[in-house]
Length: 162
Image (cartoon, rainbow, N blue to C red; front, side, top):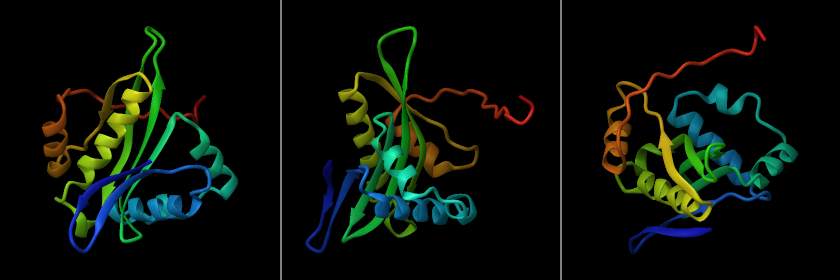
């Protein structure tokens, strides 16, 4: 899926959903996340091999979107479809969303979220949700503009003691 986001006389930004053969773009997506979150180790030290990436990108419940301008990945979103059990519908979770520092405040993040919304709608989803860290005011402002805020608590439960 290619979706034009913005166009100028010099360039166009498009949003694309990654597919099984897009391991190169997947790697560039990880590079962007590592740089944007200042965590190159988490996104680069133990990268999955191409077979794993192809299986992941072939999984319809994993959504990897990239925003591309002039061949460069300038934004990315990774998310998941979560099929519900109480009704025949799904929720869609935005796990990571980042935009290259030089391309912020140009509608790239909004375009990525809108692409996720379109995928969710096409798959029978009823909501897209995302978490924001306390103090991440730009993210909070964006998500507030696009949705309804819910104050919840988040807990990480390790599997080490299982």
